[in-house]
Image 1 (tube, helix red, strand yellow):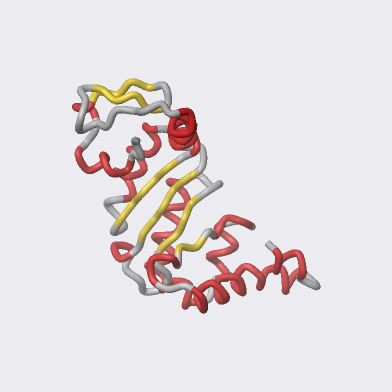
Image 2: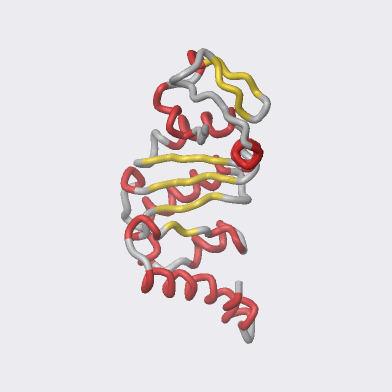
Length: 167
């Protein structure tokens, strides 16, 4: 955002989002190369992104519909000759437990790893930790309480257990 604020004109503003990525990749490698393209809009970001951006580890989806953004990223990777199965997609922002599990099931078919965590699910857990309360893990109790939702352990697919950040 700082580079965007310093931009002298619209062209510099558009270029700033890729300059930030260039600076980031000069500093960090591998798993830390997760882009957040929706600061100014995912569609325009991907349309103008340099080819080297497709080499990054993955994408974090924040404010766009995660199903649409995930599909858009997957198609963009294919158009740039990259294999979506090699990429990480992280969805976030106001997701609840059902959203998290649904996205994992949907995106896991197309990419190597699909992870999701939303403020609707994570913030209550953070608040429970801060207040000293504990939530039961799905593997250790017949039912876990998460975000004021009671969830039967049998209702949670085994592959989804690592997606839910319980205490």
